Image: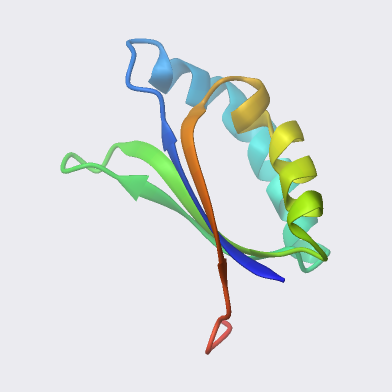
Amino acid sequence: MQFLVVAYDGKDKEAKNRRAAARPSHLADAQELKEAGNIIVGAAILDENDEMIGSTLCVEFESRTDLDEWLANDPYVTEGVWQDITVQPIRLAVKP
C-alpha cells in the first residue's frame, strides 16, 4: 500500500535543535528504507525563509500497521521532532 505522510515539526524554541540532532540518524534510516523500496520520495517542507519545518514522504508498506511501526521508531518521532503527523493512503500515478 502507498501512503502520503505529512509531518510538521514542533513550533517551540528547541524544535530546530531537535531536528538538527536527529537528522543524521533519520537520514541514515531513510536511506535504508529507500534501498528496501519503502520510501518512494521524501522532501523537507520549508517556510517562507527556506527553513525546514516538516517533511513529506510518499512511502510503500505492506500495511498501515507496518507504516505505523516504522513511524513509531523513526528518530524524528522518538526525538520529538515531528509533532503533527497525518497519513493518507494514496495510489501514485507516476513513480519517480
